[in-house]
Image (tube, rainbow, N blue to C red; front, side, top):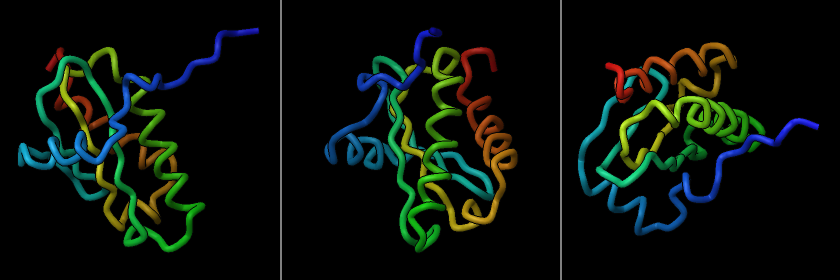
Length: 115
């Protein structure tokens, strides 16, 4: 059986204080579907904010979160050591899986060590 791949706890922002530190840094980049806030860290970690403004339906918000999490998991090794908080915009609710993934990849390329 193949090894299960997941995003380890050490790669996630877990507390309100960690999120507050990222937002306090006041550094962000974005596009039509997402805004990524970031702050210096020892290794790449992910936090997500997908609110009811994106969609009142939990199933839609969870679909967006799954795409963010999986995209980050695949890119994590190539990203600069920063804390990232991905904030979804309301347009993300109506985007399909391919569009969400492509848009996130464009943003991750801006933070890539290779850029």
